[in-house]
Length: 119
Image (cartoon, rainbow, N blue to C red; front, side):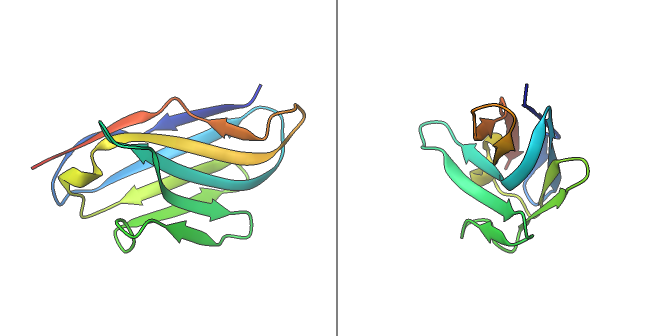
């Protein structure tokens, strides 16, 4: 039913930029929030950025000022624009959506996309 498809992951040198995209498809009534999480090897998954239905955003302290989250409400798509990247940003990035659908589930996750920042 509801699927989150992530794209844009890859390898980038330190100081470079990369943009991730996530498109939600399926029978969606409304979206409460869309967010990006990441998990580095040996680390716990952490919230990177979140955008609410009204457009308000939250950022992890480690990425504030470098990353920007945005969305396209018509296409149910969220983007994460990453700039001035450093090796600490290396992780698997996961798209997350919370919202109302025609099914019983409320919280949805993408498969994850690898982002690697070289020194």
